[in-house]
Length: 370
Image (tube, rainbow, N blue to C red; front, side):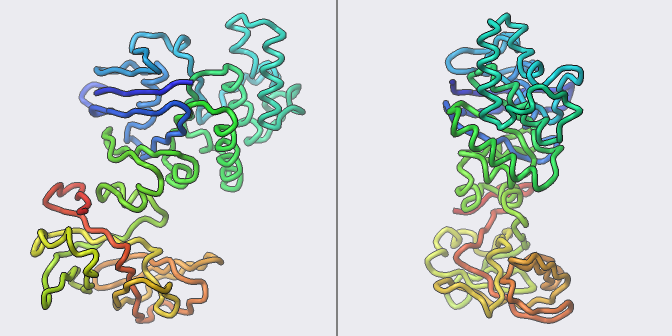
């Protein structure tokens, strides 16, 4: 078991910067998820830790040891890839045991580790089969088992569920979470799927364009995103954004998005007085846009006129795609809602849970105003 630290890590491929001064500390026994869109640098960060990529500058440490020049086989890590990478001519037992045999571990110890790992993963009855005789989910368990038998300090997972169907992904991510709880080892998990990140991680590192955008617990990322990118990436469907200005109306602050204006509750107004008259981005999550008939009690709401563009019936909820002026946005509403396409409706914005981002601070990625 060990902590992992990236200190001022840069990785360049020619002129392309894959990691831009990455500073990240991962605690011993933590389940940390690196999340972001394709090309954000998350897999490169994992490969630099594994020793599969050489960093351009900076330091990578496992525990107190700098591993920049340590060969991958000596870093005491185990990696599970998106592709299962199983040897087709070997049995499940031999696939799981292969790395231990190369290290000349005693046969009795190999047998003990493989059987224990198989029991943890529920694949004891598959040890004599070959990969072609297994389902996708079973092959993924074998790949995880091959990592477990090494008893490493750190487990690395590089999008391991991408090849599974939706139902199996849900099941397998629960199994990986239980596995972490059972093994009490450091897990570092890479995914582009923010749902995986939110449901599995003790902390999430959100990356974009090689830069660490924010590091925090799933709930704090959801409630207090640092900037517009994080706000839009965390949450599904993603947050709605509206170009706006803040103005004063009879002494009260109002967010003016042209097609609609909403009053800021007095208990939320404090941070925004300094931004009166300035360009901002107003953000609100779909779950905070309500059908007025079914508004939760005890919240401050603001009415917004809209036209229904598309309706998606999900069974336990309804997604409404709405138009207010030139703005299209999404509402996640009560399943009892009975709106129709092209109907003009009045929605209720939950003004206890809105977000405002400062365009002047960073026009490309506006920063949250707190």
